[in-house]
Image (cartoon, rainbow, N blue to C red; front, side, top):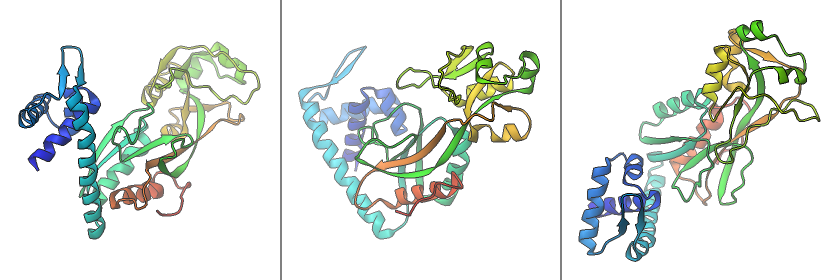
Length: 298
């Protein structure tokens, strides 16, 4: 098992090209990762990596060993899957990539942890387009329509975007009565991490407005915080702000406009039989994240 642990560390380093990143993903220090690679190289009698202060690349021997190591890990995971299916009890590490929408997902994942104490959650919050299979994720949660045919998908539910501002902002700058009025306001925008483009505000008009920019960021929390401080108008998903609207801390604007609707999916590598931990996660989130958007069980 010590040898298998060394192989696991090697694969993580080979894929991330970094002791620090591999250690973070494995819950180890960079020093521990470096020592593990050194022990493995000594045992094999070959150098696996070319190292410099700026880069790390595989040697020819390392590339060959990586191919075999992935097969070894795949066989071990398959064996563990067979055993867990026999036992029928969801358990083991579950690596999940999630968008940065903690107000929606964190409470539900907390309930999932309480319900399944034998499952170890490894959560990666990012809005970038991750490579699910190549990066070793068990599941990802994303908005939009699934595009990768290698993945199974379950719809979790729909949401609507809303234009909001604080009462203090509106008292100071006035309330926009139509989309054109936004041209005279402080608009806070979202930038997609994977494309660098700004999110389009759906304003129900055939004319595309070049809205002013007072701030740009790549997460929800910043725009919510700044909107609460009266710093501008934001275009946000309803699940992140419904409580603030109900409490009167934020006010919805241009409510008669048909705004964009979004959809959440959970995706996981397709296989004939999903593991118990994946089945548990998918079914749990389908029941809890949204009241609608349920689908058939796996």
